[in-house]
Length: 265
Image (cartoon, rainbow, N blue to C red; front, side, top):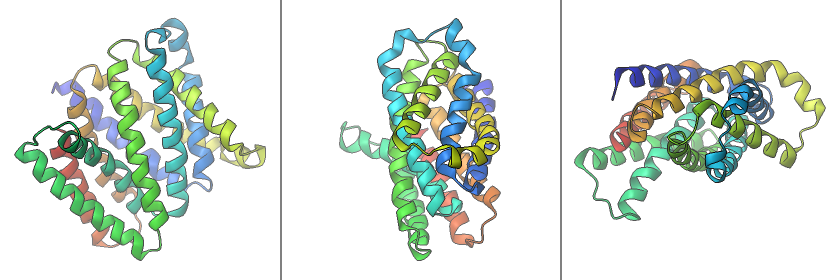
């Protein structure tokens, strides 16, 4: 993996943990994340005008749908649960599904590292899920787990698509389409939107920067390598949250990070 790609992913991981922590602290995360996506899409619109992603229109629509579902589920998980529980589960479920899917559905014999990673990942996720159940946050656990499925979907689509078109223009159209779709479905109204405009701008800066760097990294390295290294954001997110969840949350996050890295690398 080129050093430039490693640096892109590590900076992206810091930004990802930071914007998720900010989103969790907002009073209405379901609205903030949608507005943040829309801001990013509009800010990058010149790239889409200069280099429209017409070559991958079908994949773009599929990714927009997956990212719209991701937005709604993640915002709901943060509204009802702790960041130290919901964030690692949302991030860790994705590599677990990738590893198990290749093994069970595609008849891919896992390497020793993958098999160990799956075991470690399961232990970490179960530890965090148990902590969530103790804190009466089982709904957040379920929402975060399904969020991981959406992450798998749009990440695989995007990794393929950016090899065929400009990354920033592609990202712009996805952000606009997915956010408008969620706004049309949920119809939050101006009463909910107005107080969240400033929060959404800050979250949008972190979110757009983080995923833009990942798309650039996809162009320089294999998708599995990028996705594996991104998992360091799990521990960063738990540390940034500063919630009183005890050592179990931190160790669960560490296990998720190590397991995910082994599975996907």
